[in-house]
Image (cartoon, rainbow, N blue to C red; front, side):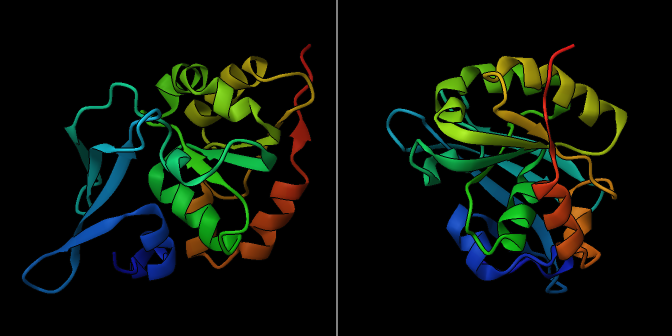
Length: 191
């Protein structure tokens, strides 16, 4: 594991999540590898690979029975769980919180958020507070609205960020603002 300087991710955070990088001949990072683990056995079963140039993704291995990104790191139960929309955002939130609270990411983007949440609901529901911190765009906020009713009443909170996502907040050095928005997240109340 190595630091990801352009995203302000420390080596400590990358190492915690098992994220590795590949370098090009110019010494610049060309790919990030995000590992996924089997929910039952804890074995690594696949990876999502992000090609830095052009922001393309592909997967290796298989994802049947894979938990959320980072889920294998945290025991069930606890005060707070933050769920973000992408692996890099999970690293960013963990970085901003100095690894203090569990942070996981959905596997397949906003369109499949509800499916990912349903498949991991037992783990998610074991936390007292579930802070959903999806991207501040239409797809992200629509996904957050689809996910909230799946959670127990008064458990889910939705963070609306000033910038596009947690990664952008970290890159812009807006850690204090992110933390305030996280703590001020409104509890979901069905209509």
